[in-house]
Length: 139
Length: 460
Image (cartoon, rainbow over all chains, first blue to last red; front, side, top):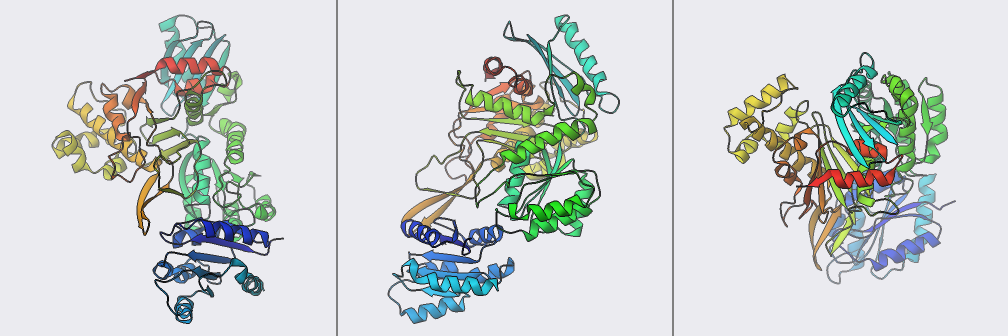
């Protein structure tokens, strides 16, 4: 029995493919059903995949600093598509330059994300959160 | 061995006589299809004409296909338009069906009524990956169970919903069959099982319902939909047999009165570097049917899409003159342009537009994305830019003195165009309309069908 279905991908015009493969591998090993959309993923693609696969969470990666622009409105579109309770995670080098992470985190939480990971977080760092959040969602 | 193939079309019943010993097509003939009385009347009339031309033809085997009585009318249902709904449409089209409409998400009462109004022969019900969304396919099964009409349902969606769907449909009077999901995993296309079921149901139920039992009784094969026979012919010509090589990647365009069909036999892998492939993968043998692009019954929508002013400018004719011919064709669908007349030039411009628009919809498209690492392309669908052969099928192309001019509608409009259309194709034409016949023959003798296709489909 899988621990849940997670849609992953690198958002926007970002083509960093290596981390995406590591995340895919690690989540599968940890017992998740992974839907990997690869790189250069649009908001609509995450949502379409989540609908079709009845996903529990969307895990957005962004490495090239434009994540803030790319991620705006994702929660609103999920709400619109009937995915109001889907868990949204984001992580990577989300903004340009070295900014205070607390401020960055607040900005992404305000955007509607449920969990924000700072630069350099290994994927194992979100395992506990993901497991609890999916368990809570399924109740 | 002598074969006779019969294609029961919506208007004409077309016969092709093949002598396997002499390895040649000895003759072709056509007569009006007589589906409303007895389909064999039209067949015998055509046979009489054939034998008048070539003498008595004692055939050993009769092979038949049909698109008479509206063809195989289907409705496809899926969840997300770009995913399972598209997969459902692809499966139905490649089985030779005419997909009248595709529905996505949970259908409403109005949409249920729309399905009833279409009076489909078959409905393909999909939605959800295996283990994915099940609410939508279950809800749509309920709607279909309540819908009026004597159609069969093929269920090819989320396997986890199969039991529930079975319970719902068993309680209705609808004939249904459950098969493998068209998209078992995200972005993985699995259309063969659904295609097989469509073929089976066509043989079991549709052949009789469409008044083809008389033909089936005499045929040495199980009657298949004509587009499927054409598709089999295209695939054979492209891939060849185990022993003889085919001609490689190809496209075929069939412009009819009501629809324009486009076939592509190609993997459609990207030909440029710096390309990210997006969206649902597409099959090697792909067929798309444009129900709004046709030379007679769909003329109005064709002209709307192609733009009347643009059409007139292209051939440098007054708009009124073009409009007058279009009006005349719509009033009298059997109207034919006289060879060498100005009307024929209009017909060619219309056919070229239908070719252009249908190909744009069939081919994949590129989107240029500027990233911090430079320009990157995202390709959705098949890249057909390197396809070397484009074949014209159907009356408008075969009877035109300028078939290449019509077929040039497939050609890419240059580097800036977003459509992955052929860049430098060679043009061929199916002068005697033998594709469906060869598709049928390939069921019995692949080598001969390939040899005849290579001989008959001539370069322009």
